[in-house]
Image (tube, rainbow, N blue to C red):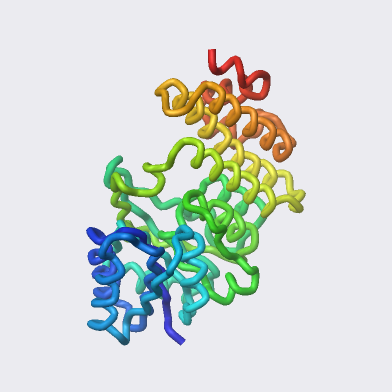
Length: 324
């Protein structure tokens, strides 16, 4: 069994995939499996991967998909091939410290943790952060689970015990964006323990071609609605008050952002008024079915701006009024 399997989904990544794979080939961990899943790229990415596979046949697994289906499906395919004791994920346009997976693996083995997190650096905002703070580490209680859900974070800064993911049947939705939101929620609800490495080891390199920046508004709203439903379904049966509040906060985060995006899309002439109204009405309907509590949710009042809360309330009352 390999110590760590790192899965990279890639689509049209000819300009960045070499760097991502390079940082994995340079890892200080001596037993790492690199799995690259090409999502039917239309640029030279597949040829680059075939050449790298020929150059490093003992270190790479390259899977070339015939049909484009998004990073969620690509990661699931990667998981089906993974043999590592722990699983990591790397986005094709990002890169990592050469010691990242050794440090995460050693920390995971030190306490037998299901999940280990580290810090990341975001180039566009010049921001560095570790989402899993010290007080959230260790054996997970309902209080810690709720705060982890509300804190959010990224799959790419973490290692996950493969046996844990398999036991809990945690997989990704076949979606192009926001496909990891319910994945992380599911992880935080079911993991037994979590730890951190308080170092910046992952580097998020914003690119203009990233999926989240090229989404057509209507398509993004559809993705947000799917994520809202998925998060709701993951936590639907959990009756712990704090966890319910955290899950509803996560749903309201998406609701808030989608309202702003719908209105801006209309203001910028990207969609018609009728289309914007339809998106807002659909958001209101779905939110009403999923959120039991109100906006006095402590996570909402702490983490969402008052102006955005006001917009959500306005959409609850009259989506049409937001487009006047």
